[in-house]
Length: 483
Ligand SMILES: Nc1ncnc2c1ncn2[C@@H]1O[C@H](COP(=O)(O)OP(=O)(O)OP(=O)(O)O)[C@@H](O)[C@H]1O
Ligand SMILES: [Mg+2]
Image (cartoon, rainbow, N blue to C red; front, side, top):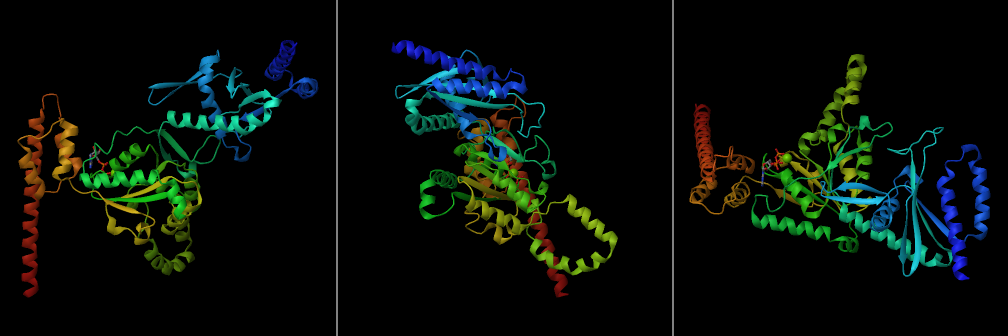
């Protein structure tokens, strides 16, 4: 008898599923009426409960995290059960993630309780304008279970699905490099504040040429930060960290950022300040960044007139009044303001401090510059930029890393000479790397090392001549002054 009863119930549930599936094919005008009455009948005898998980949350039309977690969670069971699957290629075409196609159904068992998952979508209604980014369709997952298991499903199972789904997402995650779209392009349908591509920079701490002890110290600092969730909570500090990277061009600042992202498995947000209209748009951009990320402002000294702004403002104010009177100057000023960015130093500081404490953690912010002396001390004070890292000219130790990377060699007879030359010359790792790189198949390690020796000798000679010239000029100056 029980078998018959459960068969009847299953048939009813199936009928319900089928009805749901084909409901959208009824003419729009009678759909509501048919659905209402059918539900009344079914609810009377149906012992099953349903929970819908739509793709978009109602607030702010944001994509629902739960929907994606379920999609990931179901990818395993759908691979085994569903007949129609969708494939997504991830991780540089190395792996394929399968998920069930629309209107497919799979079952799952949790602590001995059987549940049914179905995927569906509400087709676009041509009468209305959709504000959903990217698609007019509203997809959803529907979970069905017997009402006697309501407690266990709503309290434990859903939590279990979301947790597992998020874990799978982290495993399949492709890291992204985000760049901000100019704020003038933010409006319109599919516009987003951040454009993104897959982040695939090959730089790692192993390939980075720099002092080994310094390298290890930075690595330790980063790992400590990434594991520091509880520590930061305990000391009442937001889980954020600021790094200032400074040094001459070609010393590996950008390479270091990529190595940091690769070490921690973080996304990178490359923030271009000059295309941001004003402080409020800067705030909007930073609020949209996700956790586990590095926010980078490269060449901060060139991005904006951040340093002089405070000092110059007073001078500007003095002749502002005169200009206001002249209509041509006034128009020019307006045009200037329209095209240029109005992000200010104080705006940037406020946003950093605000976002530092206000929104979700695990963010690193990095400024790079070639001229650390030009920066306003307020921008780089400890607390904002917790760690200052100087990237300097190539030393012998750094050279050995480059020789291993570029030529695959350990010590060579020319190394001794090269070591001596590095004591007396300043050459950036970028230049050393360029000399070490074979320019054709015929060029062997010997040729490349000799080229480097020549370049180092030429650079040494140039430096010697320069200092001689400077000394001569100085003597001439002294003679003139005395005379
Ligand atoms: N310390 C380094 N270790 C390994 N490679 C390096 C290093 N420094 C520079 N290079 C090589 O030189 C190239 C340029 O380096 P990178 O862009 O990191 O320098 P940068 O300091 O950011 O320069 P800039 O100040 O001009 O932005 C890199 O692609 C890399 O191949
Ligand atoms: Mg750089």
